[in-house]
Length: 478
Image 1 (spheres, one colour):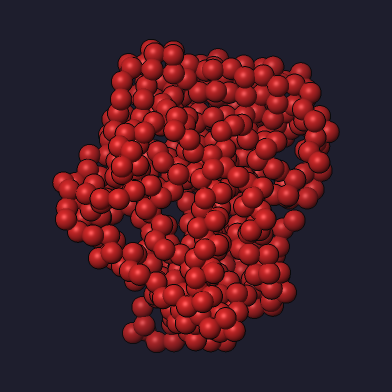
Image 2 (cartoon, rainbow, N blue to C red):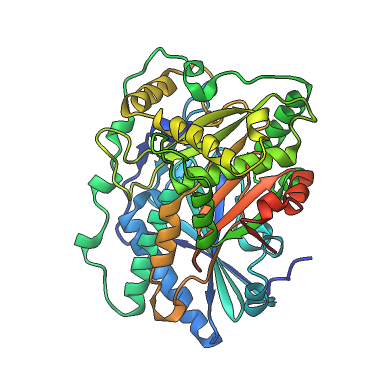
């Protein structure tokens, strides 16, 4: 049972510069994004209770300034075309961002820190504000500050249809910048604000194209046997619960496990999977780690036993530098496509770490298929897709794995300065509504090395924890 809150208040924080009311379209890559809300929690150590009023005042004042700089924070997502289930943004004169404050006096920062801030102790129902799921009128962002003994938990509820994880990093950077300034009695100069060059995404609006999505490698129809049908049905159920914000329902179907990998282990893995000859292509450490995860999850799923012939590794590709002309790294919207690598079950179950390199080459090759021309074609195909466009980022799913590694988000969190009262971020956790069995987030750890969050069916998680071919490289956190 969760701690009972003793303080709860809500404030609609509005920009200091009045908004211009109106309706704004979103890009094709926003339209096809999975419609989930991404509650992200960051933890601060605050020993002195007398600092709380100052911290809350500074957070609210800085949030108003952050909305001035990043107006999309105050928008609401509303329907556009009911036939294609498209969306648009609405700004009103009284728009703002809801900032909620809750106190959980029975929760101790030191206890959470001593247990590596375990996911099981951080339910979204306690630490994230409503709404947790998509609705016909949904906010772009909601925020909650949870006061605990010796600390503060700040939760960002960003809606994925207008903001990917890299975009969330941009918001964190902007808000932290203003918090640090307000805390020291200064103002961030306008020449340090994001400009239209950072926010514009004209290169994501291509003309409509008569190309069916099935022509893209990502959307090629999957194999379907009896087990694949069961797995596909499970994936549909998980996605439905994720978009509605039913975190408890998701937990009954798939479980999150949390793993740490030191930089030394990452280097050791890369060394162990180096190509044997100079003629063989080298791969990135990210592709190598993705291949290891793919291999080990597939092994834990026992695909041969279930007569599953193949599996795919889906990689979330940051498109900001791949489109022409490139988007700014700070672009806050969605700039994601999924790359798809395929392997037979025999390839995935070949023993030995040497096979990881062969799988990593498939991962790298799949990412390189997203050229600027192909992305332009995808944007055009999405604009003319005749059916429901929502959640079209995802292909039909079976025994697949999806790895996302928003490295810039991790880097921004590590570098963010939140002023003297809050100090540095001590930990990051996602109260994430994972939308598939086999969803993986890889982030650089604030404390060095890498953290891996992996959502799988309970029996898959259990087998992973017992597999020395996996635990040789990673350590499970509580």
